[in-house]
Image (cartoon, rainbow, N blue to C red):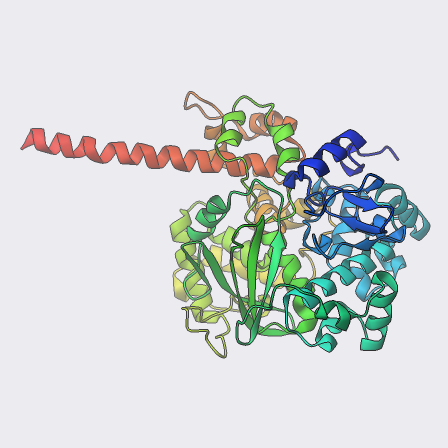
Length: 511
Protein backbone atom coordinates (compact mmCIF):
# COMPACT_ATOMS: atom_id res chain seq x y z
CA UNK A 1 0.00 0.00 0.00
CA UNK A 2 1.65 3.28 -1.12
CA UNK A 3 2.39 5.80 1.58
CA UNK A 4 0.35 9.00 1.74
CA UNK A 5 2.75 11.93 2.30
CA UNK A 6 0.09 13.78 4.28
CA UNK A 7 0.12 11.11 7.01
CA UNK A 8 3.89 11.04 7.43
CA UNK A 9 5.98 13.00 9.92
CA UNK A 10 7.14 16.36 8.52
CA UNK A 11 10.81 16.63 7.64
CA UNK A 12 13.07 16.88 10.70
CA UNK A 13 14.32 20.33 9.67
CA UNK A 14 10.71 21.55 9.38
CA UNK A 15 9.88 20.16 12.83
CA UNK A 16 13.00 21.77 14.26
CA UNK A 17 12.19 25.20 12.87
CA UNK A 18 8.53 24.94 13.91
CA UNK A 19 9.30 24.04 17.54
CA UNK A 20 12.02 26.66 17.89
CA UNK A 21 9.68 29.36 16.56
CA UNK A 22 6.66 27.86 18.38
CA UNK A 23 4.71 27.94 15.12
CA UNK A 24 1.03 27.37 15.93
CA UNK A 25 0.34 26.25 12.36
CA UNK A 26 2.05 22.94 13.23
CA UNK A 27 0.11 22.36 16.44
CA UNK A 28 -1.08 18.76 16.39
CA UNK A 29 0.85 17.91 13.21
CA UNK A 30 3.73 16.53 15.28
CA UNK A 31 4.87 16.25 18.90
CA UNK A 32 8.31 16.77 20.42
CA UNK A 33 9.53 14.20 22.94
CA UNK A 34 12.31 15.22 25.35
CA UNK A 35 14.50 12.18 25.96
CA UNK A 36 15.89 13.29 29.33
CA UNK A 37 12.51 13.92 30.96
CA UNK A 38 10.44 11.36 29.01
CA UNK A 39 7.82 14.07 28.36
CA UNK A 40 6.29 14.99 25.03
CA UNK A 41 5.10 18.49 24.08
CA UNK A 42 3.24 20.47 21.47
CA UNK A 43 5.28 22.59 19.02
CA UNK A 44 3.91 25.68 20.80
CA UNK A 45 5.16 24.67 24.25
CA UNK A 46 6.52 27.73 26.13
CA UNK A 47 9.01 25.65 28.13
CA UNK A 48 12.72 26.03 27.26
CA UNK A 49 13.65 23.38 24.73
CA UNK A 50 16.12 20.63 25.49
CA UNK A 51 18.71 19.57 22.94
CA UNK A 52 18.00 15.84 22.79
CA UNK A 53 14.53 15.51 21.32
CA UNK A 54 12.62 13.14 19.10
CA UNK A 55 9.63 13.88 16.89
CA UNK A 56 6.42 11.86 16.67
CA UNK A 57 3.51 12.16 14.26
CA UNK A 58 0.87 11.57 16.94
CA UNK A 59 0.46 11.73 20.69
CA UNK A 60 -0.40 8.02 20.65
CA UNK A 61 2.95 7.21 19.04
CA UNK A 62 4.81 9.20 21.71
CA UNK A 63 2.89 7.50 24.51
CA UNK A 64 3.47 4.09 22.94
CA UNK A 65 7.21 4.75 23.38
CA UNK A 66 6.75 5.60 27.05
CA UNK A 67 6.54 9.41 26.99
CA UNK A 68 4.08 11.38 29.16
CA UNK A 69 2.16 14.52 28.15
CA UNK A 70 3.54 17.88 29.23
CA UNK A 71 1.57 19.52 32.04
CA UNK A 72 2.45 22.99 30.79
CA UNK A 73 1.53 22.97 27.09
CA UNK A 74 -1.13 20.25 27.56
CA UNK A 75 -1.12 18.09 24.39
CA UNK A 76 -4.79 17.29 24.97
CA UNK A 77 -5.58 20.79 23.65
CA UNK A 78 -3.97 20.17 20.27
CA UNK A 79 -6.29 19.94 17.28
CA UNK A 80 -6.31 16.53 15.64
CA UNK A 81 -3.64 16.08 13.00
CA UNK A 82 -6.27 16.30 10.26
CA UNK A 83 -4.88 13.35 8.30
CA UNK A 84 -8.26 11.62 8.56
CA UNK A 85 -9.85 14.50 6.68
CA UNK A 86 -7.74 13.91 3.59
CA UNK A 87 -10.07 11.95 1.37
CA UNK A 88 -11.59 8.51 1.75
CA UNK A 89 -8.57 6.26 2.34
CA UNK A 90 -9.08 3.29 4.67
CA UNK A 91 -6.87 4.83 7.36
CA UNK A 92 -8.80 8.09 7.20
CA UNK A 93 -12.14 6.35 7.67
CA UNK A 94 -10.83 4.11 10.45
CA UNK A 95 -9.42 7.12 12.31
CA UNK A 96 -12.79 8.86 12.04
CA UNK A 97 -14.42 5.91 13.79
CA UNK A 98 -11.75 5.82 16.50
CA UNK A 99 -12.14 9.58 17.03
CA UNK A 100 -15.86 9.02 17.54
CA UNK A 101 -15.17 6.46 20.26
CA UNK A 102 -16.05 3.34 18.27
CA UNK A 103 -13.59 1.18 20.23
CA UNK A 104 -15.17 2.18 23.53
CA UNK A 105 -17.99 -0.28 22.85
CA UNK A 106 -16.77 -2.48 19.99
CA UNK A 107 -13.73 -4.79 19.57
CA UNK A 108 -10.97 -4.17 17.04
CA UNK A 109 -12.41 -6.90 14.81
CA UNK A 110 -15.62 -4.87 14.43
CA UNK A 111 -13.62 -1.78 13.44
CA UNK A 112 -11.74 -3.80 10.82
CA UNK A 113 -15.01 -5.16 9.47
CA UNK A 114 -16.50 -1.67 9.16
CA UNK A 115 -13.63 -0.55 6.90
CA UNK A 116 -13.42 -3.88 5.05
CA UNK A 117 -9.98 -4.94 6.23
CA UNK A 118 -8.61 -7.88 8.19
CA UNK A 119 -7.85 -7.20 11.85
CA UNK A 120 -4.11 -7.86 11.46
CA UNK A 121 -3.97 -5.74 8.33
CA UNK A 122 -5.68 -2.83 10.09
CA UNK A 123 -3.36 -3.07 13.09
CA UNK A 124 -0.30 -3.12 10.84
CA UNK A 125 -1.59 -0.11 8.88
CA UNK A 126 -2.00 1.92 12.07
CA UNK A 127 1.43 1.01 13.42
CA UNK A 128 3.12 1.86 10.12
CA UNK A 129 1.30 5.12 9.47
CA UNK A 130 0.19 6.45 12.86
CA UNK A 131 2.91 4.95 15.04
CA UNK A 132 0.55 3.10 17.37
CA UNK A 133 -2.16 0.44 17.22
CA UNK A 134 -5.86 1.40 16.97
CA UNK A 135 -6.37 0.35 20.59
CA UNK A 136 -3.44 2.55 21.68
CA UNK A 137 -4.79 5.50 19.69
CA UNK A 138 -8.15 5.06 21.40
CA UNK A 139 -6.51 4.74 24.82
CA UNK A 140 -4.46 7.90 24.38
CA UNK A 141 -7.50 9.78 23.15
CA UNK A 142 -9.64 8.98 26.18
CA UNK A 143 -6.87 9.56 28.73
CA UNK A 144 -6.06 12.96 27.21
CA UNK A 145 -9.75 13.85 27.28
CA UNK A 146 -9.92 12.83 30.94
CA UNK A 147 -6.84 14.97 31.59
CA UNK A 148 -8.59 17.98 30.08
CA UNK A 149 -11.68 17.42 32.22
CA UNK A 150 -9.54 17.07 35.33
CA UNK A 151 -7.73 20.31 34.56
CA UNK A 152 -10.53 22.53 33.28
CA UNK A 153 -13.66 21.40 35.11
CA UNK A 154 -14.88 20.66 38.60
CA UNK A 155 -16.54 17.41 37.53
CA UNK A 156 -16.31 14.58 40.09
CA UNK A 157 -13.65 12.01 39.19
CA UNK A 158 -16.35 9.34 38.96
CA UNK A 159 -18.10 11.34 36.22
CA UNK A 160 -14.80 11.95 34.44
CA UNK A 161 -14.09 8.22 34.43
CA UNK A 162 -17.46 7.59 32.78
CA UNK A 163 -16.97 10.44 30.32
CA UNK A 164 -13.63 8.95 29.26
CA UNK A 165 -15.23 5.56 28.66
CA UNK A 166 -14.03 3.65 31.71
CA UNK A 167 -16.38 1.17 33.32
CA UNK A 168 -15.13 1.89 36.84
CA UNK A 169 -13.18 4.50 38.77
CA UNK A 170 -10.67 1.84 39.83
CA UNK A 171 -9.85 1.00 36.23
CA UNK A 172 -9.60 4.69 35.34
CA UNK A 173 -7.25 5.41 38.24
CA UNK A 174 -5.04 2.44 37.37
CA UNK A 175 -4.82 3.39 33.67
CA UNK A 176 -4.13 7.05 34.42
CA UNK A 177 -1.44 6.21 36.97
CA UNK A 178 0.21 3.70 34.65
CA UNK A 179 0.33 6.10 31.70
CA UNK A 180 1.10 9.39 33.44
CA UNK A 181 2.76 8.32 36.70
CA UNK A 182 0.33 10.29 38.83
CA UNK A 183 -3.16 9.66 40.14
CA UNK A 184 -6.04 11.75 38.76
CA UNK A 185 -6.56 13.44 42.12
CA UNK A 186 -2.89 14.50 42.19
CA UNK A 187 -3.25 16.22 38.82
CA UNK A 188 -6.12 18.24 40.26
CA UNK A 189 -3.89 19.48 43.09
CA UNK A 190 -1.44 21.09 40.67
CA UNK A 191 -1.77 24.82 39.88
CA UNK A 192 -4.15 25.23 36.95
CA UNK A 193 -6.85 27.50 35.65
CA UNK A 194 -9.91 27.32 37.85
CA UNK A 195 -13.01 25.70 36.44
CA UNK A 196 -15.44 28.22 35.00
CA UNK A 197 -18.60 28.74 37.01
CA UNK A 198 -21.53 28.11 34.64
CA UNK A 199 -24.13 26.84 37.07
CA UNK A 200 -25.16 23.41 35.86
CA UNK A 201 -22.74 23.48 32.93
CA UNK A 202 -19.06 23.28 32.18
CA UNK A 203 -16.57 25.03 29.92
CA UNK A 204 -13.96 23.38 27.70
CA UNK A 205 -11.19 24.81 25.55
CA UNK A 206 -11.11 23.62 21.94
CA UNK A 207 -7.91 24.32 20.05
CA UNK A 208 -7.42 24.88 16.32
CA UNK A 209 -4.57 25.62 13.93
CA UNK A 210 -4.46 29.25 12.77
CA UNK A 211 -5.53 31.04 10.75
CA UNK A 212 -9.22 30.66 11.59
CA UNK A 213 -11.90 32.84 9.99
CA UNK A 214 -14.30 32.83 12.92
CA UNK A 215 -16.19 35.85 11.56
CA UNK A 216 -16.79 33.99 8.31
CA UNK A 217 -18.00 30.92 10.20
CA UNK A 218 -20.46 33.00 12.25
CA UNK A 219 -21.59 34.86 9.16
CA UNK A 220 -22.55 31.62 7.44
CA UNK A 221 -24.34 30.28 10.52
CA UNK A 222 -26.05 33.61 11.23
CA UNK A 223 -27.73 33.65 7.83
CA UNK A 224 -29.18 30.19 8.45
CA UNK A 225 -29.94 30.30 12.20
CA UNK A 226 -33.36 28.89 13.15
CA UNK A 227 -35.30 30.98 15.72
CA UNK A 228 -35.82 29.00 18.92
CA UNK A 229 -33.17 26.43 17.91
CA UNK A 230 -30.11 28.61 17.27
CA UNK A 231 -28.88 32.07 18.20
CA UNK A 232 -25.98 33.99 16.65
CA UNK A 233 -25.17 37.32 18.25
CA UNK A 234 -21.91 39.21 18.35
CA UNK A 235 -19.18 36.58 18.65
CA UNK A 236 -21.39 33.88 20.10
CA UNK A 237 -23.20 30.87 18.63
CA UNK A 238 -25.71 29.02 20.81
CA UNK A 239 -28.15 26.22 20.07
CA UNK A 240 -30.29 23.49 21.56
CA UNK A 241 -28.59 20.11 21.30
CA UNK A 242 -30.07 16.63 21.52
CA UNK A 243 -28.92 13.13 20.60
CA UNK A 244 -30.57 9.74 20.58
CA UNK A 245 -31.28 8.72 24.17
CA UNK A 246 -30.34 12.17 25.47
CA UNK A 247 -32.73 14.87 26.64
CA UNK A 248 -32.31 18.32 25.16
CA UNK A 249 -29.53 20.54 26.49
CA UNK A 250 -27.79 23.54 25.02
CA UNK A 251 -24.36 24.78 24.08
CA UNK A 252 -22.63 28.08 23.43
CA UNK A 253 -19.45 28.66 21.40
CA UNK A 254 -17.33 31.82 21.46
CA UNK A 255 -13.65 32.75 21.02
CA UNK A 256 -11.21 31.91 23.81
CA UNK A 257 -9.42 35.21 24.52
CA UNK A 258 -5.74 35.28 23.69
CA UNK A 259 -5.50 31.70 22.37
CA UNK A 260 -5.98 29.75 19.17
CA UNK A 261 -9.04 28.13 20.66
CA UNK A 262 -12.80 28.37 21.00
CA UNK A 263 -14.70 28.34 24.28
CA UNK A 264 -17.36 25.62 24.48
CA UNK A 265 -20.00 25.98 27.19
CA UNK A 266 -22.29 22.99 27.72
CA UNK A 267 -25.47 22.66 29.75
CA UNK A 268 -27.60 19.60 30.41
CA UNK A 269 -25.14 17.11 28.90
CA UNK A 270 -24.56 13.83 30.71
CA UNK A 271 -20.94 12.85 31.41
CA UNK A 272 -21.12 9.76 29.20
CA UNK A 273 -22.22 11.95 26.26
CA UNK A 274 -19.39 14.46 26.51
CA UNK A 275 -16.94 12.84 24.04
CA UNK A 276 -19.63 12.54 21.35
CA UNK A 277 -20.82 16.10 21.91
CA UNK A 278 -17.30 17.54 21.79
CA UNK A 279 -16.54 15.54 18.63
CA UNK A 280 -19.66 16.95 16.97
CA UNK A 281 -18.77 20.51 17.90
CA UNK A 282 -15.21 20.09 16.61
CA UNK A 283 -16.59 18.82 13.30
CA UNK A 284 -19.25 21.53 13.22
CA UNK A 285 -16.66 24.31 13.51
CA UNK A 286 -14.02 22.43 11.47
CA UNK A 287 -11.45 22.76 14.24
CA UNK A 288 -9.13 20.01 13.00
CA UNK A 289 -8.58 21.46 9.53
CA UNK A 290 -5.08 22.20 8.26
CA UNK A 291 -5.31 25.58 6.45
CA UNK A 292 -1.80 25.29 5.03
CA UNK A 293 -2.57 21.93 3.42
CA UNK A 294 -5.72 23.38 1.86
CA UNK A 295 -3.89 26.48 0.62
CA UNK A 296 -1.12 24.44 -1.01
CA UNK A 297 -3.66 22.80 -3.31
CA UNK A 298 -6.24 25.52 -3.90
CA UNK A 299 -3.67 28.33 -4.10
CA UNK A 300 -2.41 26.92 -7.41
CA UNK A 301 -5.70 27.97 -9.06
CA UNK A 302 -5.71 31.54 -10.39
CA UNK A 303 -9.38 32.04 -9.50
CA UNK A 304 -9.01 30.81 -5.92
CA UNK A 305 -5.63 32.28 -5.03
CA UNK A 306 -6.89 35.83 -4.28
CA UNK A 307 -9.84 34.40 -2.33
CA UNK A 308 -7.47 32.42 -0.11
CA UNK A 309 -5.47 35.57 0.55
CA UNK A 310 -8.65 37.46 1.43
CA UNK A 311 -10.00 34.76 3.77
CA UNK A 312 -7.05 32.50 4.68
CA UNK A 313 -8.78 30.65 7.52
CA UNK A 314 -12.15 29.88 5.93
CA UNK A 315 -13.58 26.63 7.32
CA UNK A 316 -16.44 24.27 6.48
CA UNK A 317 -19.47 25.17 8.63
CA UNK A 318 -21.13 21.84 9.36
CA UNK A 319 -24.39 21.32 11.22
CA UNK A 320 -25.08 19.82 14.61
CA UNK A 321 -27.27 16.99 13.30
CA UNK A 322 -27.13 15.16 9.98
CA UNK A 323 -30.88 14.66 9.69
CA UNK A 324 -31.54 18.34 10.37
CA UNK A 325 -29.14 19.31 7.57
CA UNK A 326 -30.73 16.78 5.20
CA UNK A 327 -34.19 18.26 5.84
CA UNK A 328 -32.89 21.77 5.36
CA UNK A 329 -31.16 20.73 2.12
CA UNK A 330 -34.51 19.49 0.76
CA UNK A 331 -36.21 22.69 1.88
CA UNK A 332 -33.50 24.71 0.13
CA UNK A 333 -34.01 23.14 -3.30
CA UNK A 334 -34.68 25.93 -5.81
CA UNK A 335 -35.53 28.53 -3.14
CA UNK A 336 -33.57 31.23 -1.33
CA UNK A 337 -31.69 30.68 1.92
CA UNK A 338 -34.21 32.91 3.72
CA UNK A 339 -37.19 30.93 2.43
CA UNK A 340 -35.61 27.62 3.40
CA UNK A 341 -34.85 28.98 6.87
CA UNK A 342 -38.47 30.09 7.30
CA UNK A 343 -39.81 26.63 6.50
CA UNK A 344 -37.21 24.94 8.74
CA UNK A 345 -38.13 27.24 11.63
CA UNK A 346 -41.81 26.37 11.20
CA UNK A 347 -40.98 22.66 11.30
CA UNK A 348 -38.93 23.09 14.47
CA UNK A 349 -41.61 25.12 16.23
CA UNK A 350 -44.46 22.83 15.17
CA UNK A 351 -42.88 19.37 15.54
CA UNK A 352 -39.72 19.80 17.64
CA UNK A 353 -39.35 18.88 21.31
CA UNK A 354 -39.74 21.79 23.69
CA UNK A 355 -36.72 22.36 25.92
CA UNK A 356 -37.80 21.24 29.45
CA UNK A 357 -36.07 24.13 31.18
CA UNK A 358 -35.45 26.94 28.69
CA UNK A 359 -32.15 28.72 29.42
CA UNK A 360 -33.81 32.11 29.09
CA UNK A 361 -31.80 33.18 26.06
CA UNK A 362 -34.39 32.48 23.37
CA UNK A 363 -33.61 28.79 22.89
CA UNK A 364 -36.86 26.86 23.15
CA UNK A 365 -36.95 23.89 20.77
CA UNK A 366 -34.85 21.01 19.53
CA UNK A 367 -35.07 20.20 15.84
CA UNK A 368 -37.44 17.25 15.22
CA UNK A 369 -36.11 13.70 14.99
CA UNK A 370 -36.77 11.36 12.02
CA UNK A 371 -39.46 9.63 14.08
CA UNK A 372 -41.26 12.93 14.66
CA UNK A 373 -41.30 13.79 10.93
CA UNK A 374 -41.83 10.37 9.35
CA UNK A 375 -45.62 10.83 9.28
CA UNK A 376 -45.90 14.56 9.95
CA UNK A 377 -48.40 16.70 8.06
CA UNK A 378 -45.96 19.22 6.60
CA UNK A 379 -48.39 20.72 4.11
CA UNK A 380 -49.99 22.62 6.96
CA UNK A 381 -46.84 24.74 7.37
CA UNK A 382 -46.80 25.74 3.70
CA UNK A 383 -44.72 23.04 1.99
CA UNK A 384 -45.82 21.66 -1.34
CA UNK A 385 -47.05 18.08 -1.25
CA UNK A 386 -44.03 16.90 -3.22
CA UNK A 387 -41.54 18.56 -0.87
CA UNK A 388 -43.41 17.40 2.22
CA UNK A 389 -43.31 13.83 0.93
CA UNK A 390 -39.57 14.15 0.20
CA UNK A 391 -38.93 15.15 3.84
CA UNK A 392 -41.03 12.24 5.12
CA UNK A 393 -39.23 9.86 2.74
CA UNK A 394 -35.85 10.90 4.10
CA UNK A 395 -37.09 10.54 7.69
CA UNK A 396 -38.27 6.99 6.97
CA UNK A 397 -35.04 6.15 5.16
CA UNK A 398 -32.96 7.30 8.14
CA UNK A 399 -35.15 5.33 10.55
CA UNK A 400 -34.82 2.16 8.47
CA UNK A 401 -31.07 2.56 7.92
CA UNK A 402 -31.37 2.90 4.13
CA UNK A 403 -29.32 6.09 4.49
CA UNK A 404 -27.25 7.29 7.42
CA UNK A 405 -24.44 9.60 8.42
CA UNK A 406 -21.82 7.00 9.30
CA UNK A 407 -18.28 8.27 8.79
CA UNK A 408 -16.88 5.05 7.31
CA UNK A 409 -18.63 5.64 3.97
CA UNK A 410 -16.63 7.06 1.10
CA UNK A 411 -18.02 10.18 -0.54
CA UNK A 412 -18.98 8.13 -3.60
CA UNK A 413 -20.86 5.59 -1.47
CA UNK A 414 -22.59 8.33 0.51
CA UNK A 415 -23.79 10.14 -2.61
CA UNK A 416 -24.93 6.91 -4.30
CA UNK A 417 -27.07 5.88 -1.33
CA UNK A 418 -28.71 9.29 -1.01
CA UNK A 419 -29.39 9.83 -4.70
CA UNK A 420 -31.20 6.49 -4.77
CA UNK A 421 -33.98 8.18 -2.77
CA UNK A 422 -36.76 9.96 -4.70
CA UNK A 423 -36.38 13.72 -4.65
CA UNK A 424 -32.64 13.63 -3.84
CA UNK A 425 -30.32 14.62 -6.66
CA UNK A 426 -26.53 15.01 -6.79
CA UNK A 427 -26.68 18.64 -5.60
CA UNK A 428 -28.65 17.73 -2.47
CA UNK A 429 -26.49 14.67 -1.72
CA UNK A 430 -23.24 16.62 -1.99
CA UNK A 431 -24.66 19.50 0.03
CA UNK A 432 -25.60 17.03 2.79
CA UNK A 433 -22.10 15.54 2.65
CA UNK A 434 -20.58 19.01 2.96
CA UNK A 435 -22.78 20.39 5.72
CA UNK A 436 -23.79 17.26 7.64
CA UNK A 437 -20.54 15.32 7.41
CA UNK A 438 -18.08 18.17 6.89
CA UNK A 439 -16.59 16.15 4.04
CA UNK A 440 -13.65 18.17 2.67
CA UNK A 441 -14.15 16.98 -0.92
CA UNK A 442 -17.94 17.31 -1.28
CA UNK A 443 -18.71 19.23 -4.44
CA UNK A 444 -22.25 20.13 -5.63
CA UNK A 445 -21.32 20.73 -9.27
CA UNK A 446 -24.97 21.37 -10.20
CA UNK A 447 -25.00 24.54 -8.06
CA UNK A 448 -25.87 27.49 -10.28
CA UNK A 449 -23.91 29.95 -8.15
CA UNK A 450 -20.75 27.86 -8.48
CA UNK A 451 -21.22 27.47 -12.23
CA UNK A 452 -21.25 31.25 -12.58
CA UNK A 453 -18.69 32.04 -9.88
CA UNK A 454 -15.74 30.29 -11.49
CA UNK A 455 -15.68 32.43 -14.62
CA UNK A 456 -14.70 36.08 -14.63
CA UNK A 457 -16.87 37.14 -17.58
CA UNK A 458 -20.31 36.34 -16.17
CA UNK A 459 -20.74 33.23 -18.28
CA UNK A 460 -21.90 29.93 -16.83
CA UNK A 461 -20.14 26.58 -16.96
CA UNK A 462 -21.95 23.30 -17.29
CA UNK A 463 -21.91 20.95 -14.31
CA UNK A 464 -19.63 18.62 -16.28
CA UNK A 465 -17.16 21.38 -17.13
CA UNK A 466 -17.16 22.67 -13.56
CA UNK A 467 -16.54 19.19 -12.15
CA UNK A 468 -13.70 18.63 -14.61
CA UNK A 469 -12.04 21.91 -13.60
CA UNK A 470 -12.47 21.07 -9.90
CA UNK A 471 -10.52 17.82 -10.21
CA UNK A 472 -7.36 19.82 -9.54
CA UNK A 473 -8.83 20.92 -6.19
CA UNK A 474 -9.07 17.42 -4.70
CA UNK A 475 -9.20 16.49 -1.85
CA UNK A 476 -10.30 19.99 -0.77
CA UNK A 477 -13.12 20.82 -3.19
CA UNK A 478 -15.53 21.70 -0.36
CA UNK A 479 -13.24 24.54 0.75
CA UNK A 480 -13.25 25.87 -2.82
CA UNK A 481 -17.06 25.78 -2.71
CA UNK A 482 -17.13 27.89 0.45
CA UNK A 483 -14.70 30.43 -1.00
CA UNK A 484 -16.68 30.78 -4.23
CA UNK A 485 -20.01 31.01 -2.43
CA UNK A 486 -18.68 33.72 -0.13
CA UNK A 487 -17.16 35.67 -3.01
CA UNK A 488 -20.43 35.49 -4.96
CA UNK A 489 -22.41 36.72 -1.96
CA UNK A 490 -20.01 39.64 -1.50
CA UNK A 491 -20.22 40.54 -5.19
CA UNK A 492 -24.01 40.35 -5.07
CA UNK A 493 -24.17 42.58 -1.98
CA UNK A 494 -21.83 45.08 -3.62
CA UNK A 495 -23.97 45.08 -6.74
CA UNK A 496 -27.16 45.58 -4.73
CA UNK A 497 -25.53 48.46 -2.85
CA UNK A 498 -24.77 50.16 -6.16
CA UNK A 499 -28.25 49.61 -7.58
CA UNK A 500 -30.02 51.51 -4.77
CA UNK A 501 -28.22 54.88 -5.33
CA UNK A 502 -28.68 54.50 -9.09
CA UNK A 503 -32.43 53.99 -8.69
CA UNK A 504 -32.61 56.97 -6.32
CA UNK A 505 -30.80 59.15 -8.86
CA UNK A 506 -33.17 58.01 -11.60
CA UNK A 507 -36.20 58.88 -9.45
CA UNK A 508 -34.71 62.30 -8.68
CA UNK A 509 -34.13 63.06 -12.38
CA UNK A 510 -37.67 61.92 -13.18
CA UNK A 511 -39.05 64.24 -10.49
